[in-house]
Length: 172
Image (tube, rainbow, N blue to C red; front, side, top):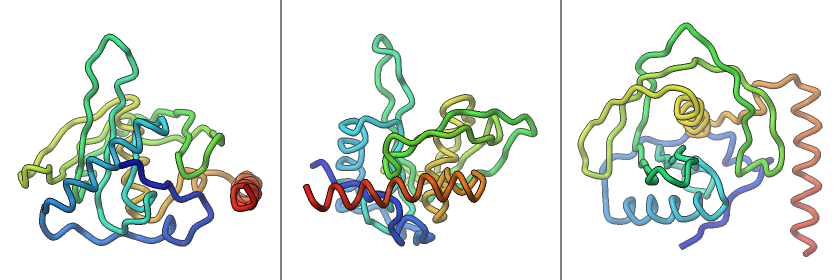
């Protein structure tokens, strides 16, 4: 089922989420719905608060090449356990801030630990777009948006555009 995606500004997008206590069928359904929503948007990552669920769950798939099989990932209670000193800048966007992009600098590589839908702990080293995406989505779980890395003026301009978009959508 495709879920509605919250648009900034929304207080839920600025709220730190609660850890997941156990992997349930309800959580598995939510993960499936979030993946379907992410692919439909289309996007490469989606965090639970973006669909109004205040729990530490994110989905992502950074495979862009049509020839490469999709790699949908579900990360429960993810945490960065290591980060490179090297930084990289990517032009980031966000499904909760449609059609707005800005360059954000983050660690180029990160090691992440999370619980999978199988209930087991997983760890993986992420680089390039995957590293940027997982950090962006973990930020969502901590109530932080990519525009929080921008200057106050740029952030204000984007927020005003989103307020206007929400008014237009409400009238439609």
